[in-house]
Length: 286
Ligand SMILES: Nc1nc2c(c(=O)[nH]1)N[C@@H](CN(C=O)c1ccc(C(=O)N[C@@H](CCC(=O)O)C(=O)O)cc1)CN2
Image 1 (tube, rainbow, N blue to C red):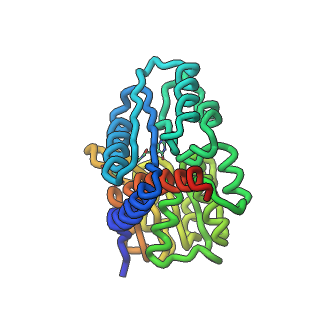
Image 2: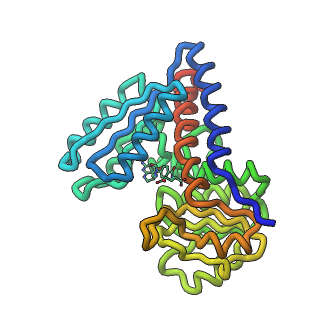
């Protein structure tokens, strides 16, 4: 029997917990605030940012969306980030990715105060994650959301073989670090990996984040494995599909995330959770 992981249901649970914490913080005179900066008109990014703003407002957060033209310069963007760095009503700053070509993304990441880095992409926070540093710091929301899904479905990574296909800063690298910190034995694979499919078949936990529609099929999955699909691709008919061929994979996997409705909903729910934590840590000195 394969279990289909219900990301929407877990996201709802996370959001309910977040709303409770927001209400408690408000009673203590703190309203968590998030600023999302979007540069340009990428249609998918517009939808994600709108959804973030709606969710933040619904949960009782102070939410600011800063829409900038595609022609925005690096200096202009840096100056706006600087303003939010010193704005006490904002606890989390997020610059929506992708950015136009004239913007140097790593320098933008570096400009965000690590204490307001709600994406967890700043090298200070990535370094803390990699070193499993004690204390409180933000961690990238998609991989953190995946760890929540694993916990909710009783999948303990300790001692398991995990294969993460994809080495991005947003997903692959932090995912590998989180699984390592949870005592899995982790291999990061990517476009240059030889015998990728044979490697995938060794995984007890397989995380696929490549952006290649249906790269992984049932034949590439170890029977009973937990399969986490981070892909958001379009098939030849324009339908949203994952990096995993769900139909063939679901006959082999023990647990599997669908696309849509698996990992995706966890990204925004975890973003809200992280924003509220940043507010707690800064305003209440936790
Ligand atoms: N600064 C950042 N930029 C981007 C991030 C990020 O974490 N930080 N992640 C992605 C996009 N993203 C949020 O920004 C995101 C992607 C997908 C979903 C989601 O809910 N997906 C749904 C399907 C939606 C659809 O039908 O199109 C699902 O999988 O069920 C939410 C957020 C890139 N940029």
